[in-house]
Image 1 (cartoon, rainbow, N blue to C red):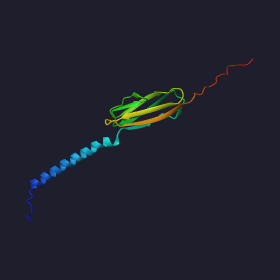
Image 2: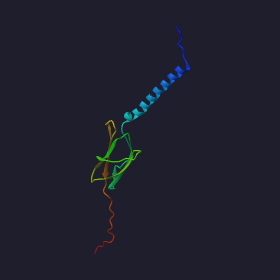
Image 3: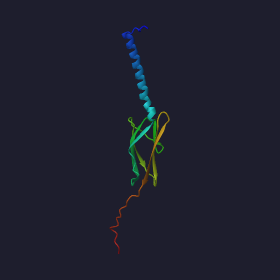
Image 4: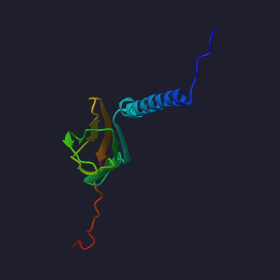
Length: 131
């Protein structure tokens, strides 16, 4: 059986092909992470479960998204994916809902229930005198 004749040129050619194939496979794996992870919402300041404030703030980041909504209303993000929004609470039980979708149509939702508490009123009847 004859041993094939191997030259430096053929070795370099095969190494070049292997390098291109490896680079392409790495690129495909790197880009598939977006598909594999889907849309991600990370809330850094969630609204409190109970509050006396009429307005709460919701802030965080969103990754791999094409749109994001807060209670059905589209909100904007910075180029880094950061968002910060104010939510006006209605009387009674309020649900604050974030929803986002990626370019493949997959969605994720985060829900935060908030119960507004009545504000404490200070009684300033010290000036009232009884006769």
